[in-house]
Length: 249
Ligand code: G
Ligand code: G
Ligand code: MN
Ligand code: NA
Image (tube, rainbow, N blue to C red; front, side, top):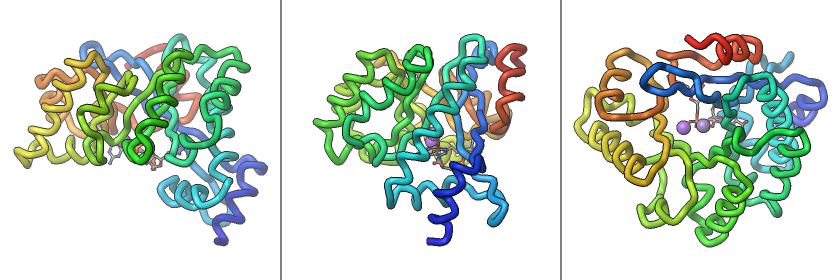
């Protein structure tokens, strides 16, 4: 609860930062987008992980204030890049917010940014409590031109039927499967299945948490179209992302 108080001041005091992790196309390692990840540099608590403060923000309306800050900051940075998209995480409560679509449209387009360069990352949890409502929200977002990614895919409750029904651009393979790929037949089988599913349905498939060259090679061989992880690059500040966006690897 101390953290909660600190967090509400953090936005106003400019203690939040976004870092950006490249999302790379398999073939030429072209940087096609960046995932935005929030960081809280607190003078009191030090570097606080979003894994710690997002759940706290989720318990109050602070999540909306924080989310708006993230959108605005991501959109500002995006405008400096030559063409890449930014991929922004939204928690289930943000996604289920009243008039979520209108809200995001307003913030992105009023900055003069095309929704085609703004990817909304949500998890299966965000959509599977109320499938009908989520389908409607996703349909409207897609109609406005936004990109939609399903994050941590494979860890939640998606049914294949609903995957087909939803308007999605991208499946992100959860890094636990990438990590297990070399050791366990089950993980390898899941990774292969997601890649095939995504390809068959015309979606971009991003493998997350690529940490080694052998993972990179296995994923390439398996036909995975996009990669993200420490082996390629760690999340970086806006300045470093700008350099990479222009120069590439
Ligand atoms: O960057 P890191 O691995 O520490 O992120 C931890 C978790 O916090 C991840 O699940 C990530 O999706 C989430 N996260 C990071 N940035 C944001 C953000 O801007 N908004 C939301 N809702 N979640 C975020
Ligand atoms: O839940 P989500 O997929 O949004 O979480 C993304 C988190 O994964 C970020 O906090 C980011 O820092 C972390 N991450 C990104 N690449 C790697 C990686 O190669 N290995 C590990 N362990 N974590 C990673
Ligand atoms: Mn994510
Ligand atoms: Na993920």
